Length: 218
Length: 225
Image (cartoon, rainbow over all chains, first blue to last red; front, top):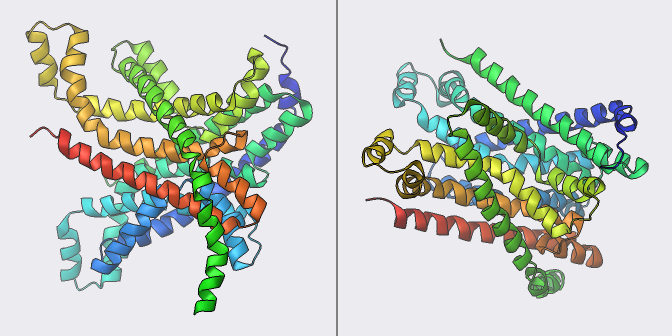
């Protein structure tokens, strides 16, 4: 077992914290995006035949495309075709938001299906519009059913945010790479990285469990 | 119109022409994915049996391992195994092995969860019936519980296989020449990023679509009437 030098890595904990903050920021932003796209796809799959088939094809394509490919596609490909420079962080958020939206759409679709049919009918008999029925009757119940699964999606976003290092975003993996190459302490650098990421994922699941128990209808 | 078409062909013609060269990497992509899937099934089964063993400390260990394994991304695993582990064990790890091991560890956790829920879907009556017939624990598992549990698990296992296939695209970062690596290499040479990444993305979509179609066919075939 060679000598280890954890002190040199631990003294740079501020860099890891800054990197982890970038990861959390990317995860939160792309989570908002995936929820938005997922809700759109899920409501499309409840519409008429045309929008159903469009949503089906989109979900199949999104589920088949790897995050890494999507990321490079957005960052190098789309920016080339559109002719604008997409900032790396924005590219990650867009790619990650698209990549998990297939899963999110499934989550929302199944939670809306799990609702009792009577809820929609009751809302209608109260004279609510479709929009009112969605925002004040169906959605608040569906989100409670969806929450545990959405927690998994959020952990997926946290994990996916680490891919940002590929295009040079200074998040936790990037920090570890820098420290590993500049101090030549690969094991300590990546070990510290793994601990930070595992703790982040645990904290995220804990937060979602807490939200779930807070929102539960008694 | 003709003009437009010629322009389109000038951009996409060479891209489509190099499809063959890129798709040679599909063997590596598939080999890595299937190897990791096979090994992860074994690892997942071990974790599941630990979870169902009835020994408190073994169950706790398996649970903690599952939670830790699934909270890192494939990218972090690949970097850790390829760059960090050799510094400790002193021997370099070939990139393709690093990729397979990383994907195996990550997916053992997911497959353990899939198998656990599938095995617990087998009714307790089956277990009791096997006990009444005097079967040993080993035979109960191999002859009664696993054959029924695997049927339930197959759709989720195949969807996990497609996730492994997609995650395997990251092994290009340590220089394994899979389809993604070849596509980015060619894209960087020709400066046609959009075209090549679209092409390789569609290749993944097609393979994943074939796998999911195959899975629903197998599911129909294996269903207990």
